[in-house]
Length: 395
Image 1 (cartoon, rainbow, N blue to C red):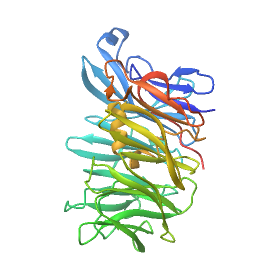
Image 2 (cartoon, rainbow, N blue to C red):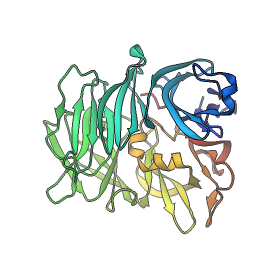
Image 3 (tube, helix red, strand yellow):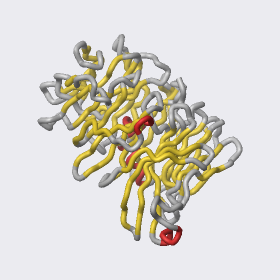
Image 4 (tube, one colour):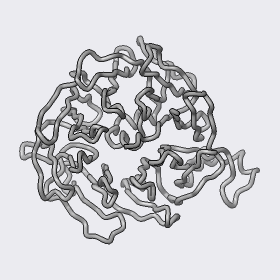
């Protein structure tokens, strides 16, 4: 069964069974503790950044209380699939929600939030609800769990900041931090491929070296160098392959082409020469999907291309919602926790507005679109909403 979670037009969380078309709202306008039903005319509770648990039985999301149009209290909660049970994990005072990621075991949630001018990474454990443990802060901030979830590898700052750093941290604070002794290059999220850490470090000429090695950085091998902002995504089949691209102009400029790199042999295989805004693996590892900005036609186009390369297939056009645009900008952080492609690689889902042929209609509420990747049909509108996410494919 292909299930999709999305933020609907009322900023509530719904799920949709793509096989039957059955939708279920998991959240609704109920008063917070200490409130009453008369408050509903003044108070709204909207939700953001839903993400499926590793076993697919829960969805974690941020809740933001809005009173008389002003954003207020933020909390993080998990929702059961029956739409009845909610579990509050933590209140997050003075925070703006940015990102959620489950611990690989489902026993904890890592939270990324903005507090003042800083981004703060924190941890909440299922066994200690209400206790928020800060792990790191800085701008920008990206991270990933080690494969077993024992530690988290954090990338803070940029290569031109004096405090830019890569830190391997025990989220429980029982082991000492390991600070990687090389200055991080221009990239976002570190990844783990076939048991090894892969990230970028700065070269003396200002370019970035893509390296692989042990998570503590003591044994590394340089793979290649690139100018600009690097994006790296691990192949989902456990092979030592990464999809790689670089944006020479830096953040918000296009990535130029996509290639596959074997981190063990160094072998490289071009997949696409297109300038793209973001790209993703199929959960089966047989193809990649990428988004291209077409300024002349005032839209983004989706394309699919085989991992062997060849002629790409255009899948559809749209104009992204604010949430989807933010997601695409930082796609290499969101990709492994908020997939846009279904676990069986049959559907891609996205939120946006009708666009193409020089027109973008933003007058109506945004829609959730689903494209059947085995069909030549255009993407179908399945609901009104601002963000959509599939469960993570299980290994």
